[in-house]
Length: 530
Image (cartoon, rainbow, N blue to C red; front, side, top):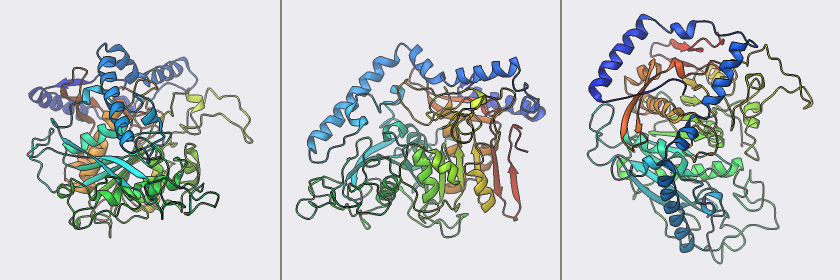
């Protein structure tokens, strides 16, 4: 982020919040309301360059920390050794993935390495997809007797839950452990998982020509056509980037997450694979119907969270899977045909249109995998322009600002039209990778994950826990986040919301009130959306 953050103890935090809130109330959004520099002016270009530089904040801070790489590689090599041992124990179920073959590819922040057992619990699980491929994941929950680190309240079960869908291009579940951990500490049972063909999950199916004789051997339907609708090849789930593969793996993960001893998971074509028959933390999840749901018929206390292609899939599944009560899309909430086709990492197509059904939080980025100057940002974060019809390059218009409604148009506007609660947040200088805890290879802002986590926590508190204070948290001008610093200490960080929202692309929200009216602001810091 652009502004400095504060690390405070509880007494100092309370005083600082009181002072800052007083200042913010007495001078409402003064800085945000002031007009910015004119597009094309030296001041505008200087601000743009500074914004692109800020997009590299996280990898630069990691590279500048002399203790980072020794501890990172210690954890990465231990992770790789564990993955290799798992593969050796299951030679007939190969995970031919970057995460399993490249040491360190999916290793995360070493300052979080001691989370399990000290701040929460994590249990590894293995189950099979509908095509018999083995899928691997982790389930997170609070420790027995734990208290909410923000409020001090005792976390009493049973608890609501969430399932996290990874992105494509070989994204692994380990890259999203940070969010699962944050939610577990706040009183949620959370599962992340590797879709078929990514991370530690198996690449090939087990429902082909050999399935009847030996389910332990991977087999496809060669040379016939794809066995299941939506698949691109006769090998179900291959390549992994298929929309249908993500849908099938996610549906299997939701079913497994909701399983229990009285309703075990089927584990098709498991053969001799040592699988979990049900969610090992099933008793901590609240299986009772949610009588306070804001969406009629959606009473399972479950949120679906997705990143990148996972966000596209979450946007779709919330409309067709009645087990989903709330959805979070991490770059991007996707509803229009243009937005769906914009995810060039995926192949195939969704089985049907995206239909808004449940409250949706969208946290979306200014940039794709790397920053680009403002005069190339008018089309999409994934497809920099200018471009003329027919694909020819057009001369950039240096005097034209990007379309401020760009991020609201991908899905938020569709939710508005449908009258379903929604919110879009665009962090300043954000890239597509602020949502992944990954090595310092590609750009990400220094506090992007913190900002995303804050809003995800508040969104789930509002729609799964029905916390009366969650709405205030979503609209608060101050953001509070507890996470590890470079010394491995867990500290409270506080920063100003408006200073960390995009000045190019609008953030906004619309909520339905009990009296039938709406509470809305489609342009929180006056970026030009009206």
